[in-house]
Length: 407
Image (cartoon, rainbow, N blue to C red):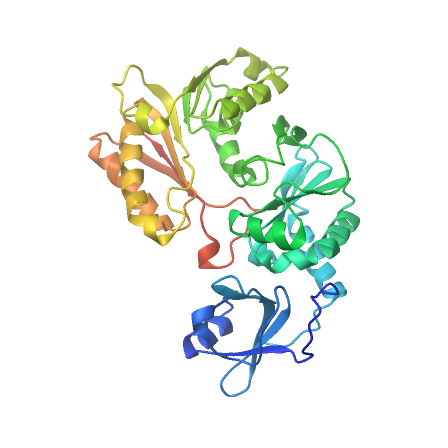
């Protein structure tokens, strides 16, 4: 990229790596870990282009260097050397846009445009909320490139504004060395705490400065649509409801009642705003709506006072690293068992996980085992993953999974 950091040593930063890293890079894995580097020709600078050669001097990969992360290089090109310049980056952006072009009609104005490594921009996601872009970066390699990225994205996408979101692990570096903060406005002006957008004809509001992820859980769009098709005439309990997206789809699908339960009053207030934005829809206006502010973990331990025709369990990530994985597996089991006790006979149970440390098959096995232990017969309706605008091209990129059971 033209904005590559300037360095005193003109030699290209070069690595030689372990045999296992050679195999991984040859198979297309997009990360090079620091403990797999066997030789480095000089010190590198954050965000500069580096190349990897095999022990028999074959080109393996080129990528962006991060001296502050155990993922020391994120791959841009593998197998053969390429000229990585502004035209190359614009071509990658156009390819990502082309993949999404057939996915959305005019009644959806919020979706993911770039999904990190899976779209060739490692450690970076770009979401659109109507005329505002939200760029979130998970690695410092992009900090030196932000002026170039801002110009390219706004120009190519015709956006009116772009907001920067920063992963927690790079916020201190971004502020001290580059004067960026989480929620910095890179281009434009406006009320970024209440961006209005549409999703499949429903109206929503997102706070793109402070909200979860980039402001909304865009990755659950397809699952929200699936719940809409199952909700007719049902009472719905939405645990960890956040801003009520699942509940609103259920209401439009003909649910008789929706109950949002979340520990955050701010989240419940956002859900009420989203509900009010769609009261002109007959099914939404006729659906009874209730909000319960409570810790779902504690609430589910209370005696069961009523049950529902549909129970949705979508907690936040319970395992953010390997050390939390075993505790997360136990928590998923207890949560699902407790949530199932709130389901009426003949009901629909939907359970989701966004913990990347928990594999799909592990999560599905936990939920089905709990269902079997309930003593009730059930039918496995479907198992789902990422929405189509959130492609996952390598194992570590897989995080979202959901299972739909009918009892």
